[in-house]
Image 1 (cartoon, rainbow, N blue to C red):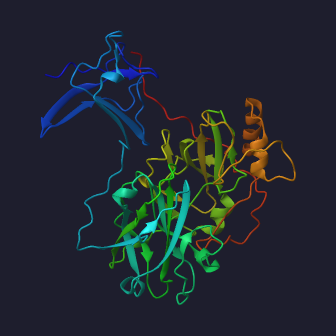
Image 2: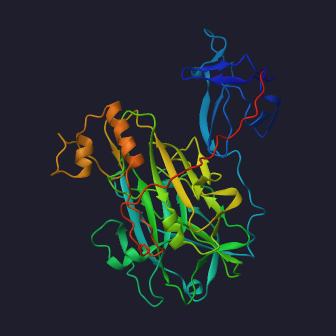
Image 3: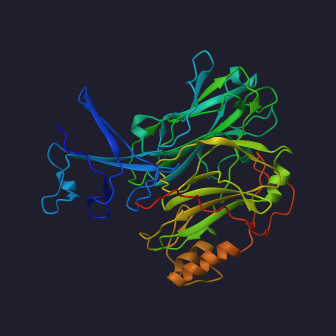
Length: 459
């Protein structure tokens, strides 16, 4: 017999019953094969200040289970975490856009681009690159990638943080050395830098990504170079030795070309120690700009259709969103995740394709929380302590030398918000489009998007 179901809310100490408003209805459950399923109905926005607002982004679902009553004997209206026999947490996107039927075997064939029995270094962070030649059946004729997903060995789960597969932008007959090693190694041949055009990408938590039926990502063909490069980010904070990994990306590839060629455009901040977040702050923002000047030279005259988006930042990132600006007026946001987790990153299909025209601007903003950090967080892979700022030291040294206070944090935020920028307006081959991309002003937003309305009535 199940106990009565209740609508409850949580604070930092326990879970307490919400007696003011019971917003969960139609509870039901069923048990089969030692599994219990239960469901309930509630509004996405209950207009109750104690309730969770269910949005398009990530939702963290926390669960407890026990054979005895989970309520606390001392505080009857709270749940005792200690009385739970099992507990856990799952990250999901509840309001997910789903395409139609899965790909049938007759439509595509599968190919995995992977590392080969790599001894994963014991360093905390490793970016490993491997150049791979396309098989002849792919290289000789243009195909379309219509789905991609991770192919991770069970022993490497949690160690493989994210992966990207790049096409090498070089003349069709150009051979690329089959380099395999650290991506930043001085031994990496310079020609490997041409492997910059993203074919597929995966990050921790992502599900398979399937293209809309009218589009596919081009791969292969006589007019295309026959080499790709797999880049894998290994995150090994425990410095575990002896991990042997052959993980990679699995592509579903079709000989039947679809109507449109799809591509991938990356927005955001470059990896440089100029971009840094002070410690002990619960809200600090950094924004990456794709300016109107860049889209004017980089996009076709009729624009592009954006049908999917992946938001990405690292451990201190708590919220990410991409704004769309046209002639100073903010249009509907391209994507937003107010409860972002670096452990759950996926390319998400938009509810409706968005047209981005030449002259439009895109702004991706990351919100950071560094309350648990004792010193500056920068985008470099290592950090160290300094004594005091000095023109003879590097940027990261000087950042670490500062005794950060709320006032200094505010000044740095204003500097990032108001200063000019160096724009990386790059082509698919990694080279910049022609133009002067230094000291550009931030994109003006003359008419911001108004807050999303909430339809609440007094209770």
